Each structure stands twice: as C-alpha cells, then as structure tokens.
Image (cartoon, rainbow, N blue to C red; front, side):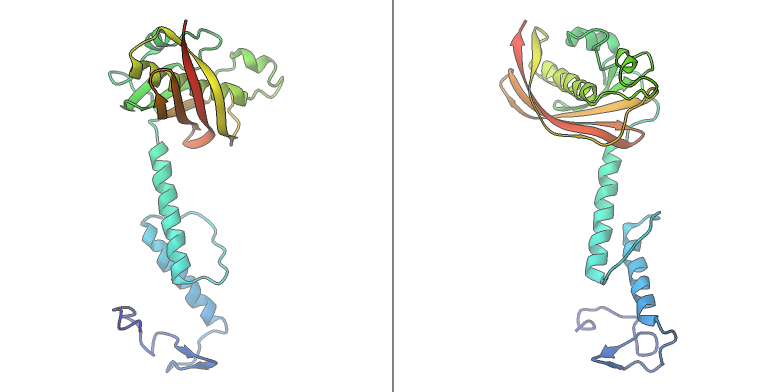
Length: 240
C-alpha cells in the first residue's frame, strides 16, 4: 500500500526493517537489540526536519509515529509563526507612522503618574497598533510593590493596554472630547513579572465596536520577545 502511494521509494529489505506479526522479514539480521527504537528516533528527527530550522529542545516520545510527528512539526511551525508576529524592533524607531509623547497626550486625558504609554510605534491598520512603555525604577508604584523587590503591578499593565486601545478608538472616531471607562476585562493572564528597566511593547487590536461609544479590544504586552500579560477589554466612552 505504501509503494502504491509513491512512498518508501528508498526502502528495501536490505535497509529497512519489515515486520509481519512476530516475524522480521528483512534480509539482514537486527544490528542492535534496540534497533526498533533507533528507527523511531530517526523517524522523529526526519519528521521534525520539516520545521525548516534548528530546534533547540528535548523531545520525549511515547509511541511516536509519522502522523503524530508531523503534527508536532506543524505545531512548532505555528508557534514560531505566532512568535514572529510578536517580534518588535529592539531599537525604537523614529519618524512617521506613530505618535510621540506630545501627540499621545493630545489624545489621552491621562497625565503622570498615570499615563502608561510613552509613544505609539506604528499603526498597522485602523484597528491595530503597537505602543511602548519604558518602565523605570522611578515609577511611584514601585515604592510599595514591593519594597526591596520591585514588580510592576498587573493592573498597571492592564491599564497600559486599555490606554493603547483607547488611542485606537479615539483615532477611529476622530475625536478626543471623550473619556474612556472600563466595562470589563476578560481572559486576563499575567505570565511573567515586569521589572524596572524593562521596555513593554503593548499590542492592541479592536475586535468590536458599536458606534463611537462602545468597543472591545484584544491586547497583550511583550517584554524581550515574550508575552508577559494579555487581556480582552471592553470599555465605553462618555463625553467629558
């Protein structure tokens, strides 16, 4: 059946192990007591080569086969694609396409110490953008969270995500005469601590909006190419 499917072209009784029931039909005897295991290991290596790049990791396989090996390769490829989408420049670009601090302050009503966005790096579309926040030891919340072990509170990360998402909606509505209010925060996850000296890249995408007063956004924060927090936020906008 495999030959009919144009497979195992390089296989023969000389270089492959053919088993039927309890009998080994290969012309040559088994070379090693664990030869079946060695063939399975080679299968894994060959199938994971389909990923197309070096894999730095430790694989533990239980009853592997080509189908599950290929699914693992596809999962690794999907994860790599997802991480590539999170990639941000290690140096903050300047020029057109984003907003500097003054422009951010013209849109958002927040001011120090509660302005949690330094600038907007880029607008990928009308509904998606990336902001940046440099976390310094001078942040007021570090005085009590925690003495001797400063960690950025998760609620401040959620606030940063909300502010970046608000900028998207304000630009879409072409108005800054309103104030955004939280309605809900769902699927909130904090994956890694954010420390003084970290630079947070804040990704926001508007997923739903009703007119110019209600919006939902999917957001996540990235530090050193790793997601540190994420949330789905809903907020409403009221006139000042």
